[in-house]
Length: 499
Ligand code: ME8
Image 1: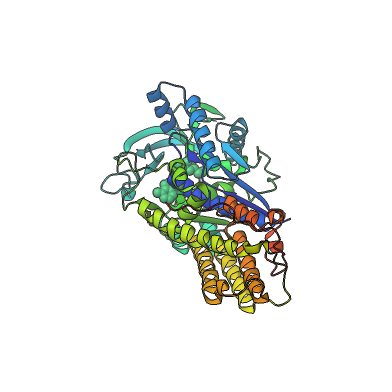
Image 2: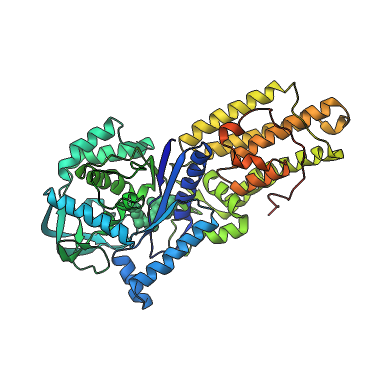
């Protein structure tokens, strides 16, 4: 069976889940469900990043221990992901003992290979980012992401010799053995790697208490980013065997936001090269969104809680809205008015209204619609074409285009009703049965199409078509054309009430 391993970043546990982390996680979930529908053996990993100075400070401010903060906030992430119907296979926490063992094993290996040495670091450190910045990288002396002045740090630390992997990495990216998408992000990484000499990386902190200790020197903890990246291996059960990688490794897709591209496109691959591990097949960095044109931040008070949104729109609809409002991979803007518009257009007046129209026509006189000998060839063409485009777009992570393909298909079905005017045809007439059969078959396909985005609404549609058995099928079985009978149709509930 084909395997598919997909990961989200692990989110900082000192913050609450917000619409940004929900965005990446929902995208991974849609892909996971799509690959499962295709009969693949999917492993979907997400989790929380629990060490470092930020967590320590948050705990101090709250007057509780760091692990208590981690337990509380990590549970919040799990709860939010449950609300959003995230079908993860494992939720990794970097405070898990197994993760610690994996980190220690890698550090010991790097040391044994003489790739680690003790030195002194002088630099500008941004605590919210948990990273050092060079003067060149700052914007007017401030962190480009947090708009805060970094602090000048000088401390002893261990360094990882990553410079020796620079040429190899450039080759791998150029040869597309390590795919970075979209193309702009690949160019960004190649531009960086070809015009800068990689500096050795500081991988420990001396004055930080909350972290995994360097195995041979307990006065240092592992730099939180090195600790965090290793989750992609420990999260699938790897705990230190360098001869046997877990069955799901390498990852098929590592999905991240573009803010953490360099860690995943340079540092993580350098570590993998150093330990001779296979590379993830694809790294995809999506864009960032603003809220009403503004950056989302605690100080502006515009951080959106996905659970609150889910109570307004319902979770399935929210998943659709998040991935449908702007192209994945590009930057965009979200707003409540934009969500309401899309909800009303695509869902309430689109899919919901279509389903109501068709089930109303189909439940007149309790008729059954048994698959006919003659089917509408235009329908056949449209369904096949829609699936073809859908699959291409889905496999390229062009979620908003998939959503457009679906909307377009809904428009086609609506137009078919308007043109055929079944209300002018007698129910007893064979033509009536044929029109409605075509429509029901179209809606059955529609229900499959929305399934990765809106799993429960998809089930509701199958239920009103009297086809609950569809749920147990793979997509290939579901995509067969005009083979189904519709014997127990019911109007069902209103799927998307007007808001
Ligand atoms: O960086 N638009 O965790 P984090 C789109 N722990 N996506 C957004 C977003 C926005 N406005 N805001 C956040 C970390 N994201 C590290 C990762 S991985 C080994 C360690 C998403 O909690 C996006 O996916 O700050 C981004 O990469 C991630 O949240 C950052 O999450």
